[in-house]
Length: 200
Image (tube, rainbow, N blue to C red):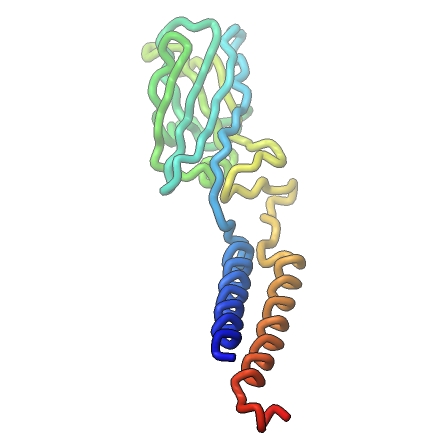
């Protein structure tokens, strides 16, 4: 009888732990495991140039992001800066300096979370040269495509209002079932723990 009660206690503990994991994994919009999925956006030619390519954003965790720019033709030394505002009308004052694109490539780890880079209109501006900073030869809008799948990044709808977060209906249902099962198992354990005369 004691072995049965101990086995039931272990089962109850496992059930409560599983219920806690369900709630922790989905409650409050917090994912159980963060997954980093690099996202690429097009770098388009500007000012009549033929320079184009991609800018890839990868979440490094800890509020840091890697920005890798690849351009073709792979030539020249182009100062590359993040500006506030879209490519169509960037703020002239640079917001964050990236490594120059040299021979078609630039990789910079920035101390800015990917969600902050993409929350408001921002753009990566590739300038002609140090001597010709007023000429932007290529530009990329830092806008994530819908369904990009980057952890912690909510792609804003047209109205600019982020989607509501919280436990899903499935999570709430599973949690409720887990609690009901735990209550039923507790009653069984209490009954098993009584002397035989009391159970009769």
